[in-house]
Length: 148
Image (tube, rainbow, N blue to C red; front, side):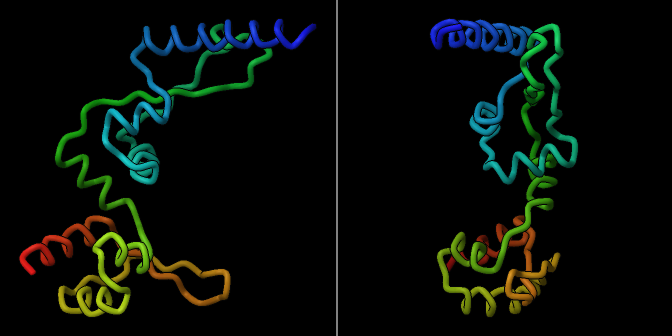
């Protein structure tokens, strides 16, 4: 089999999968991010808490040689659902400070003043703890920074 024949077969499989997904209203990961306005981390959280469903592409669509494949079933997110996502996305101190446009030291002062405590703790590569903060708490801190 030549490279051209392999590519034609692959293109045919891709066309079948795409047609099936469009027919059923399923999207791939980049399209879901774009349509929902979510980062990859937010979309992962939405999937983990059940707001976005993973759909496995049936074997009769993919063919016997195509291993698996998934698409996502999405819907327009409500304000409450977006809040649930924010409550399930966790970021580090440095990431939180960067999102707020402040130094990590200023972030520490701000979070202590507004009583924002880390929600989770991981063990870093060095053995030191890495504290994680809810994205929703960081957005709340951002609202306190706006008038400044």
